[in-house]
Each structure stands twice: as structure tokens, then as C-alpha cells.
Amino acid sequence: MTELRRIPASANTAAAPAAAAPELVIPSPAPGIAAPKVGFVSLGCPKALVDSEQILTQLRAEGYQTAKSYDGADLVIVNTCGFIDAAVQESLDAIGEALAENGKVIVTGCLGAKKDADGQDIITKVHPKVLAVTGPHAVTEVMESVHIHLPKPHDPFVDLVPDHGVKLTPKHYAYLKISEGCNHRCSFCIIPSMRGDLVSRPIHEVLQEAENLFKAGVKELLIISQDTSAYGVDVKFRTGFWNGRPVKTHMTQLTEELGKMARQYDAWVRMHYVYPYPHVDQVIPLMGDGHVLPYLDIPMQHAHPDVLKRMKRPASGEKNLDRILAWRKMNPDLTIRSTFIAGFPGETEEEFEYLLDFLREAQIDRLGCFAYSPVEGATANLLDNPVPEEVREERRARVMLLQEEISLKRMQAKVGKTMRVIVDEVGAREAIGRTAADAPEIDGVVHIKRALVPGKAKPAVGQFIDVVITKADAHDLWATVA
Image 1 (cartoon, rainbow, N blue to C red):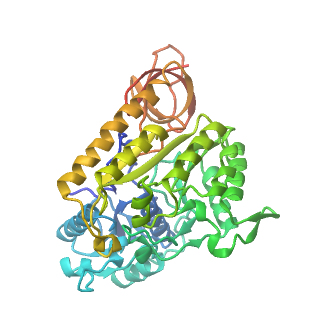
Image 2 (tube, rainbow, N blue to C red; image 1 turned 30 degrees about the vertical axis):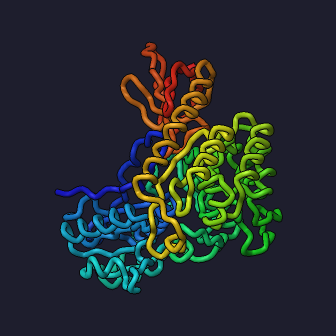
Image 3 (cartoon, helix red, strand yellow; image 1 turned 90 degrees about the horizontal axis):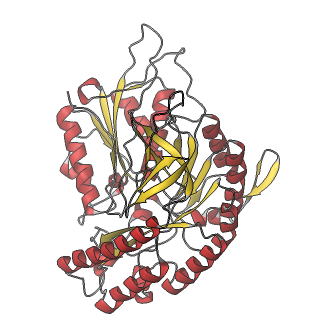
């Protein structure tokens, strides 16, 4: 029996991955009613994961069950990623596996919106037997296809869906997507062609979902989008209402409201996909009370102004460095995660050395680096002077070697400190947790030695505990309970 699984997007980062999310379990329908079963494979980034959760929530609302194996499913949905060539191949392989093991497959996600050089649909060209293909963020279209190929059950007694919906993450953390699409046209990226321009969710809707998640026991809320800093731009920062109070559709006001809510439920809020716009300066002071975490995930991609210009990025390297230094003055505990591209078309050795100098000065805490990979449909493919593949890989390796040194130094500075961690796993002699500096699945972890003290309760998953850091390497920490 082949087991269905959730496959996280592979990342070339200087951090070890956290444990995989547990299997999704859906309550059974009323006795005597055979509910149709849908298998689900979710690939890609957290934004795609949220799309998967929305589809599963709708399936659950209509009385469908999920299957744990291909042969136990009446139909399989594969949510794909199509950002880089490796992700495309991973998605095509997953579709092929689902077809071979089950035969009835509906495909959704970013790869579903991708065409090849001849304008043909990539998925149906490789796998013509799939039942239907949709793009990302397409709950309605996916459900229409499910209804055609697996008619929905008629069970008026089916359990109601919880307010927070169906989640693929562990119970103690969840992703909250605040917008869809992106207004930027970066030359290496095809996401706007797949997900469209920025569309911000109404602020009352975002805050209601956040409250539902906190009420359901979520202790860490990870805010995601294509461009979190641009939240509200498309609606001109329209004023909405929450609990009878006016609140602007703006990153700063959203962060402030989420911080208040997190304080009420003793929880964390973590910001991802933040572009370094000037108004982010207003968010840093909100990160001082331990609830809105002093953590920013900022996709900088490069530092040299000419490379950023070729990339059509919305910020310059000099301003990024000045902003980072200013933010760290405001909050010395700030953790910065970023991603960079080595070997972008036209990148000279001088431009690459400029990037290395930037990294030495910026002292990024968590860093991932990718060797440039041509993405079909990206305008960067038309740029002059492509960098040979072996040079791209060699430069990526040099970035990661430098980052290993930077990360080790910054991690070792934490030894001896008492830090608050959230517990992700509990074993017989060790618990695994994360500090405010560690996002799940992409950053490092804390290995917590459990002292076997008679009568002392072991920590629980989702619990916050204080630990003393005793050891560090470039990725992870080791600690004892304080």
C-alpha cells in the first residue's frame, strides 16, 4: 500500500528542517453512510499549503473524507509548485505517481497555470490522463471538478467544520495568508503570471480567522503572502472595522491588532515575505513584548544595485543595509532571514564579491542561497551574458560557506542565555523546540535535554518553556530546562 504524503518544497538553506507535519485525520460521517474518499498531495510553499487547507476545509464541509493511501482513495488531488525547474519536475513526478497508483487525479496549483514555449499546458502534455487542471487559489474550480468525477455525499448529519477550518500543520501553529498575488514584475519570477496581481483580504476577515485559530489552540501564527509589506496597497489602505473599531488595511495596523490578540492568548505572531519598505520601520517597535516576534523574513535576492536593477527588484542594496542596521538599533534581538540568488545573468565576479561584502556587514541570521535557475517564461532568460552553471554553483557554495561562519558566530553568542521556546516534539529523553528566531520547517531547532526529575511533568507539544542554552552549532541549539 503506497502512503500519501505531504511533500515540503526543498530549500537550499543554512538551517535544518523541522519535523514533518502529522497526518491529517478527518472525523467519520454519520453511521451507515459511505463517504467518498479523496487523497491529497500538497507540494510547495506555505502559500500553497494554505490553498490546500482551504480545499480540504471545503471537502470536509461537503462530507468528503480524506484517504491515507492511494488505493484507499476514490480520487486524488495534487497541489503543485511550478516556481523553479526542480519544483516542476517534483510536481510532475508526484502527478505521475498518483496516476500510476490511483488513476483518477485532479491537479491544481502554480504548475497548473504554466505553459511551455509553444503555449501548451505543461501538465496535460506530460500527463494527458489527468481529469482536470486548475491554477493556484482555485477552490471553486477544484470543487467543481471533484463534483463531476466524485459526486458529493448527501449527509445532513455530517459534523460541522470547525471555525478555523481544516489544517495540515500541527495543532500549535498555523499559516495565515493575508493576500494573494503580487504587483512586482521581478525578471526571474513568474508568480504574477500564475497568481495575478495583489489582492488583499479584508482586514476584518483576516482578524476573524486569526481569532478563530487562537481560540482553537494555535500558539504560533505565521503571516504569509507574496508581499506582506504591500498589504492594502490595492485597496488604497481602505479602513475596515473590527469589533466595532476602525482599522486600516495596512501592514502596520494589522501587526498591531495581531499583537494585541496574541497577547490575549499568550501566543506568537511571525512575519514572513516582508519587503523592506520604509513603513516596516513602524513595525519594529511592535516587536518588543514577546508576542509579535522580532523576526523578519525578507527576500533580498542580491545586494549589488546593478544586479537588483536587472532583477527589477523594488529596493536597493545600500538602503537594505542601512535599514537592517537601523532596525537592529531599535531591537537588538531582531532575527533576519533572507534568500539570495547566485549567478544571476550578467553577474560579474566584482558584483558577486559586492554581495559577499554585504553579507559580512549585514550579518544575516538565517540565509538560503540558490544558484540561478532559468524559469520558463521569466524575462531574465533574455538577459545577456548568462553565467555558466558551474560558476553559478561555485558562487552558491561560497555564499553558503561564508554564511556558515556568520551563523555559527551568531548562534554561539546565545550560549548561556535563557530563552523562551515553543515545544514541537517530546521524546523520552529529549524535547525539540524553537526560539523566536526559528520558523518551523525552514530554520533551526533547540534540542532540550529532559532532566528525569521524579514528579516533574514533561513538557507538552505547543507549550512555551524557558531553557538555558548550553551548546550551539551553525544551525541548531542545545539546552536544558531553566
